[in-house]
Amino acid sequence: MKYNTAQHTQLQSMVIAALLCAIGIVIPMFAPKIVLEPASFTLASHVPIFIALFISPSVALAVAIGTTVGFLFTGLPIVVVLRALTHVLFAMIGAFVLKKRPNTLTTLGGNVAFGLLLAVIHAVSEVTVVTLFYFGGGMSQNYYKNGYLVSVLVLVGIGTIIHSMIDFGIAVFLWKPLSRIVHMPYNAKIRT
Image 1 (cartoon, rainbow, N blue to C red):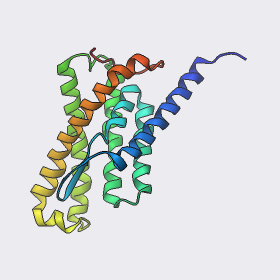
Image 2: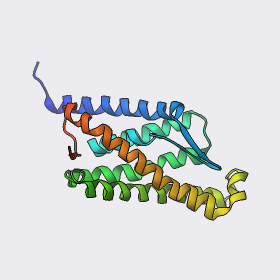
Image 3: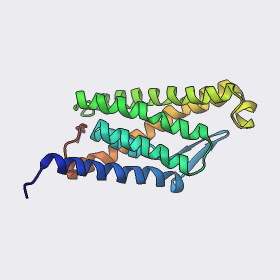
Image 4: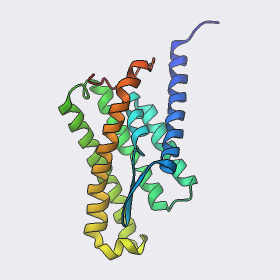
């Protein structure tokens, strides 16, 4: 039987994507939550998606969709599931940027700029979903008590930027040692 490197790499990618999906589904169950009524933020919940986009666009897509399906099966409100679905956007943009420019994360400035770019895309996407539900009357009363500016733009928008940057930092910290032991092609070269 002849060894097929391409099939081996595809199998590795599938297994890593599945593991990252599982971690992405489990993290919200056990990780600490920061609650700023009416919003809440689960520490490290985006880390598997960031690690996936460091690997490849296909792994990023699989993990973003897989974790969204996980949210769907937990019985969370549809607005939360749709917010999770928007992660496909920042994951794919980030993965394609790293595929085209693998040295993006080799400098501190590159790390910060890339993380901030993804955080803004992440926040704009989630604010868009919440805005549609907010003006459609589909949010909890706490959102309406605080008003659109505070509940949506500040808590969801700015809160998501901060949350995304923290999770991105955790992912970069974890990716440094992981990138040395992952024996498959990946896109993100990291500053050591």
